[in-house]
Image 1 (cartoon, rainbow, N blue to C red):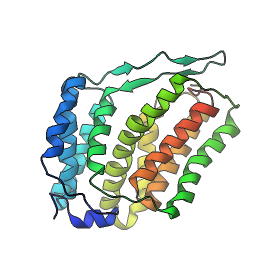
Image 2: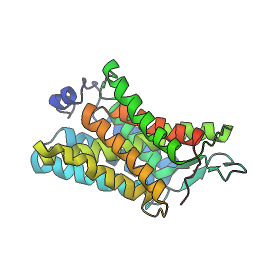
Image 3: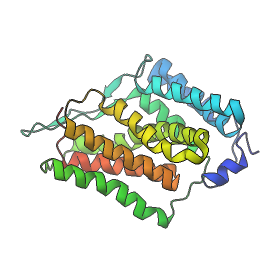
Length: 263
């Protein structure tokens, strides 16, 4: 065991764990209280729970998975004070009905900071063999979207800022929740039936993102994208390629398709 993180976890996901003081990260993460108030407390708590997953087994490991999942969900949905949306710049809008907000979700920002601090402990390599899977996971949902919806080209500084926030906050926090916690945890419980975690987590992704959608086409496109992300994790089990796949789809959606989708 190295600083509370089991060596076999580093080999499994894959990579080596960086040598670092076990208390340095949570103490530094307490600084999140300054910009995010009470929500900022979630950052060190999330980091501690993530480390607990890797350093435990049996029911303690399962409890750690459940605890961090609930913590991330409550924080990401902005149920805590200080997790409100912060407008960074004026939104982009045009005559075609496109509307893009460059807002910072405080709750997801706190989760992303904690995840980034934790994931930097792992040297997950981006293998060249991952590239075809990444490109497929990005291109297939966009091709389906272009088949369903008309081309809607757009760009502005607000969209550029949105893209940066989407990568550093939204995609890291959401892939940490859906892939590193939900799908990985479900896969461990299911064992030989691990493939069931793909449709299970994909359905949860769709419900949390488009549960109120009344447009069948938008709902189907969201479902296709969520299956792509879930399959990518199932096949490669690499956190960072899942993050970049999610970001690639979101970025091309903003640039090429109507945003938001109808319904």
